Image 1 (cartoon, rainbow, N blue to C red):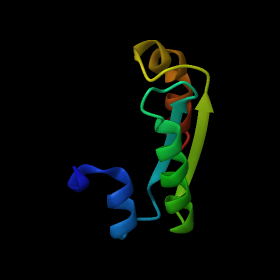
Image 2: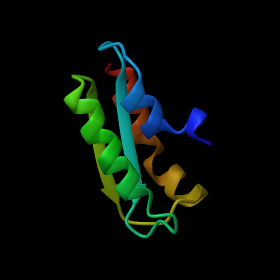
Image 3: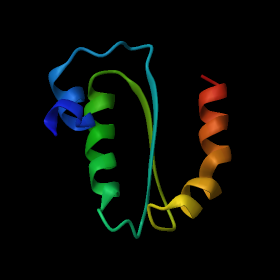
Length: 79
């Protein structure tokens, strides 16, 4: 698992500063993804990586992703 864990990867590797990262999680995520996103955001910003972290209303499901898709696209098309 750690080989693919974003937190482990961010902590243990040099990451290009050209990378832009948009993190988000629902405030009712069963896996409490918002906690991992908060921690990953902290690691990335400490390394000088442009990162945004958002906690929105909802669960980690297809409805949540669809309701936030426009935000993802705006972020990545502007960077």
